[in-house]
Length: 196
Image (cartoon, rainbow, N blue to C red):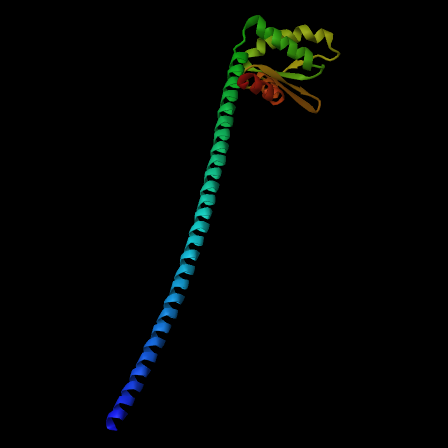
C-alpha cells in the first residue's frame, strides 16, 4: 500500500508539475504576446515619431532656406540702393564741380538769370568770392530798373552765386543751394535716367 501511496503521490506530484509547467507555458506565451504587442506599438510609435520629426526638420529647413533667400534679397536690394545712392551722389558732386567751373559768358549768363529771378530791389547781395566782380557789374546794370537799388555786401564762402538779404528774409542763391534744391525736386528723375 505504501507503493500505492507513493505511486499516488508521484502521480499527484507529476500532475501538479505538469499543470505548473502548462501554467508557466501559458504565462510565458501571454508575456511573449504582450511583449510582442508592446514591441510592435513601440516600433509603430518610433516610426510615427520619425516621420513627424522628419516633416518638422523638412519644414524647419524650408523655413531657414526661405529666410535666407528673403534676407539675401533684402541685402541685395540694400546693396543696390547704396550703390545707386553713391552713383547719384557722385553725379551731383560732378554737376556741382562743373557748375562752379563755368567761365566767362556762360557763368555771367547764369548769374544774370539768377539776379532777374530773385532780386526784388532793396536787398543786400553777398557774392561768392569768385563772382564778386561779375555780380558787381550785373547789379550796376540791374539797379536802374529797380525801385530800390541792391547793395553789394561782404563776400561769402561758396563756389559761385550769392545770398540775398532782404527785410526779414534771406535767399540762398549759391550754386550749391541751387543744386541742392534741384536734387530735392528732381532726384527721382535723375535716378530714372541713370538706372533705367
